[in-house]
Amino acid sequence: MSPFPVRMEDHWAPEPGVDPGRAQLMWFMCLGHDQQVADLARLGQARLAGLDGLDLVPPEWLHMTTLIAGYADETDASQIAAMTTHARTLLARTPPITITLGRVLYHSRAIMLTASPREALTPVLAACQEATRAGTGQDGRLYTEPWVPHVTLAYANSESPAAPAIDALGTKLPARQVMVESVNLISQAPDQKWSWRLITEVPLGPTPAIPTVGSGSARLSYRKS
Image 1: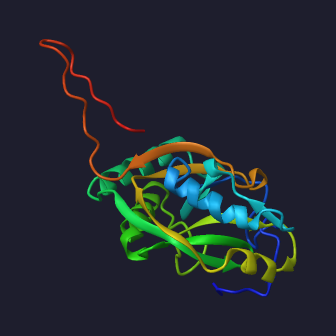
Image 2 (image 1 turned 60 degrees about the vertical axis):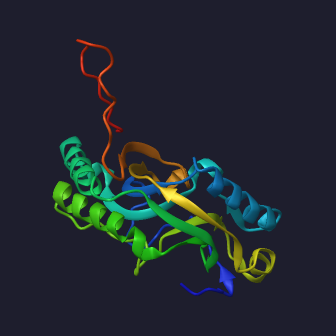
Image 3 (image 1 turned 90 degrees about the vertical axis):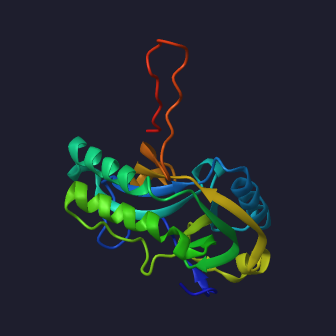
């Protein structure tokens, strides 16, 4: 990805080789619930507000794309169950991960915050890849190669000069440390823009059971789905 594109282009135009009428299964690290992420995104988006050609991502849809697992209509319920079970087993050995957001990354189709260090997140990517192979027999694919974990602040919706956005936002925002605690399998249809349907959430690290309450009572436990 070039740090400074000359022009922006429509992110919502169909990707080559992708059927625009079919939903895709993806592994996302969803971060919209994190107040630090939401506040940082709000700060960056305030600088971009009013510029033509940009769609600002609402806070509830802030995320990091990890892996595209395949088309939803080619994956049945048993395969999804196998994927998520395998991911839980693998990620139970990976504790929550602290990343830093703040450096701005420009692409011709989007404006993003990079997540660093990238190496800290590679166990999550590896688990999603292995889980996808175990469930579907397919490797899945990266949105970009090499994988650059990032949180998108805005998508370009038309062709326009990139300079106004670069001048308004600059190259960095105040650095914030954020804890990544889970990865989510979602279904996203191309016409839904940034929104998606959550299928399941897989926590990082072991999921503790709630202790037994009272003598002789039934054992109660909770597992995050």
